[in-house]
Structures are given as C-alpha cells and as structure tokens.
Amino acid sequence: MHFSIPETEVQSGDNGSTYVAYNIHVNGVLHCRVRFSQLYGLHEQLRKEYGNHVLPHFPPKKIFTLTSTEVEQRREQLEKYIQSVRQDSVLGGSETFNSFLRKAQQETQQIPTQEVQLEVYLSNGQKVKVNIFSSDQTEDVLEAVAAKLDLPDELVGYFSLFLIREGGDGNCSFVRKLQEFELPYVSVSSLKNSEYKIVLRKSYWDSMYDNDIMENRVGLNLLYVQTVSDIERGWILVNKEQHRQLKSLQEKGSKKEFIGLAQTLKYYGYIKFDPCITDFPDKGCHVIVSAGNNELNFHVKLPNDQVKEGSFKVTRMRCWRVTSSVPLTNSPGKTETKLELAFEYLMSKDRLQWVTICSSQAIMMSISLQAMVDELMVKKSGGSIKKMSKKRMNGALRRSDSQQAVKSPPLLDSPDSSREPILKLSSKLSSVSIRGISTSNSSNDISANDFHVTGLDYDCSISPRYTEDNELPNPQEVKNLLSWERGRNRRRTNINTENQCCRLSYCKEFMAYKEIFKK
Image (cartoon, rainbow, N blue to C red; front, side, top):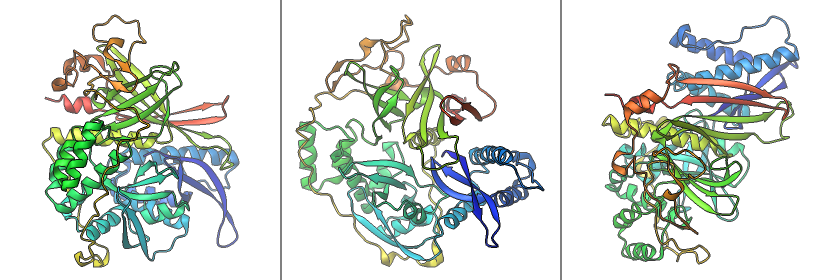
C-alpha cells in the first residue's frame, strides 16, 4: 500500500482556534486527516510497545507557530515517518498502527458508530446483505459475509474483500484489496458513488488451493460463480470447442469438472487490469496487464499496430517500486495523482532492466506481486494459507442467519462474435518473451523468433534455458549477479521543477531470491 501526505489543510478547532491538518492518502486517495499531536501520540504508543531502537525518526515538537516553510518541512518528515512505519513488517502490521488509522478514518468521514447494513457482492452480481457496525474492520466484515453464506471458518482465509468500480458497460476495475487498517463501510460510503462496490473473491493465486475449497459446498459454489464470471468477462480465454465443453458441463451441473476444465485454460486465476502505458518493449506502448500464475502478463500493442504478448515471472524480478506524482500546490482537486509501477527484471544471464507501467491500478499490481511472492514462500516452507482468527462482534453473528446458498449463474453465452477466436493458447513463459529490440548476441537473450504473432493467435515458445520444470535461474548465477542490499526498504524523493511535481517513491526490495535459493 502506498502511503503519502501530499497536502496540508488549515482547520478550525472547537474553541475557534485553527490548526494544521495533515492529509494521509492511501493509494492516492484521502484516508484521513490528522493533527501533529495525534501522530505524536501514535509515536509515543509505538515507542512504549516496541522501544526507540525500532522506530524511525519523528519530527520534534515546536513551541512557536510554524511558518509555511516549516509546515512543509514537517509534512515531508511526517510522510517519511508514516511510510517507514508502514513498511516495517512489525510496526506496520501492529494493531496499534492499524487501529489508529481506522479511528482516524472514521473521525475524518464523520460517520458515527452505529448498526448499518452493508451490501457485499459475489462475482455473479448476487448481493449479500450483512448487518454490521460502521466501525467494523475488514476482518469483521469478511467473517460476517462468511457467516451469512455459511462458509466454514477454516475457509474464510481463502477469500478477501475487494473494492471495485463497475462501469456502465458492465466492465469492472479493481481498485484495491481492502486492508486491515480500514473500515469497509466507511471506505465505500465516503466515495459517494454507486459505481464502487465491495466484492468477495478468492484471495490466493495458486490453483492448487482450489482443491481445499471445492471440498465444501459453499466454497465450491463461490469458486464456480467466480470462474463463470471471469470467462464471461473475457478474462479467461475460451475457444469455441472449449466453450462447448464448458456449457455441457454447466448444463449437467458438474461444477467440479467445470472448474477442472477451466483450470487448463489460459489466464485462469488471473486478474485483468485496465489498459495502461508501458515503456517495454518501446516507450509509450499501450498494454493490458494481467497478474497470475506468478507472473505479470503483457498484451502489448506496438506503434505499428502489431499485438504481442509476453510474461514477466516474479522469480526473475529483483525488486519493484511504486511511484506517485502529485502537484506541489496545496490546492486539491486540480490534477489526479499519477501512479507508476516499475520493476527490475533479469532479462538474461547478465542483464537487468527496469520496466515501468503507468497505471491508476499500480498499487493493486504491486499488492498482487507481493501476494504471489508470499505464496511462494509459504509453499516452499511447506505451509498453507493461514486460518483467519475467529472474531465475532458482540456475539451478534449466528449461523442461523446464514444465506445457505450461492445462486448458480445462468448458462454461458456463446463466445462474442466480434472477438477473434483463439485457435492456439500460448504455453507458460518462464521468461519475458517480448524481445527483438536488443542487438545482444547472448544465447540467453530471448530473440524475436521466440514470439510468433498471427493476429490474436499466439504460439509462444518457452525459453530453452529456463523450462517449465526449471523456471528459476541458477542460484549461484543470481548470487554472483545481484548485489543485495542489507536493508529491505529504501525510499527516495526527487523534486521535478519542470513539471512542478513532487515525485515520491519507495522501493520494497524483493528478497525472494535469497529465500528461494536458501539451502
């Protein structure tokens, strides 16, 4: 999650006095307004719990009223502080930090604690109404939805709540996965736009976890309606013969077999993002990015109107960063925050290259990358998805309130006639396949011949060096190539006076190589 304090506001106090409020933004959207004294109180509480040695520097108190220059300096210092705390796995995941943000969010939006009804949607559009408190955190709401659907406690951790924006054409855009530091009711209500909805979807990436869910009737139905929805949206590619087989299984009510066949299809389990801009293979290329199967998939339209496709495996990413560009002026609403995701990729044996994506969904892409890495770590250690802790607000949730069923979606429509049929599905790429822009003669570089373009019909070759069975680079090769920093996090600030933008970025080092190759 990308935290920033891009602006300050002068607010009036209860006694008529004024004070400076610092606007904390999460993913480029206002989360809360807080005073310096509130942040200082948070710092003191964290200091008592964890000690001075783990806390970042906090700006000192001032006796006299601050000048505008001093306010700006304090804003920058507080921004650096809040980012450092959030990036620390202990401090950022602490209940002290998260409860502070939840309370501040509720106070900022001026929504009192009261019983409310929240609408949560399933992938097929089915509405689940849950009675909660406006102050309930994400985990509480998720458990309330699970109880309503009669989903067993041990399967709750396989699902998450997502904030999406649904356009008039029926297409939906992922805004973010709801986090532990926010209140879902407040988050969606404060947007004051009916296009924003909270949706329940599976939260994992590895399809092997599907087997755990399909053993339960409710879990099977949830997975089934999500799969049907993804096919209908075109997120999962289906040719005419596969569509015929799927429809036949659907008519028979063979949900497990339906999902089993869908698992073999291209882009099963992927999240598809809105069209955006990338600098790879050429600057300014239009691209549709999808995340899944431990990779970012690029569907690129080149300047010559050629369409190419390729994948970037997370196991070959050294690190990534999210960058936001905001106006230097304190006047809100003039321009939107510009977000970029950049990752450093091992293109060949001895060459790393940065690839940048300019997208309003850059944070969601970053979260997806981190989630895939986390799953790799869990899988390597022999673990499984953690069960979510049992929480019930005032004992108000009972199984007798359960909805008992998830409605099955209607039969699949025929494939869109306006869409060219996919005759061949590309195999998994263990390395980036969009090449042909380098003059390197290295035998380890992927040449243009490794990618065949025939309209929308792809026949992609697998790199001869990294096969599906051995998709990780040689451990010693990586250790010799990459210079690993001891610190896991770094942040940089660069003022671009020409564009009058303050570019704030932080880079969370991707240390998966060290963990994956640890003997």
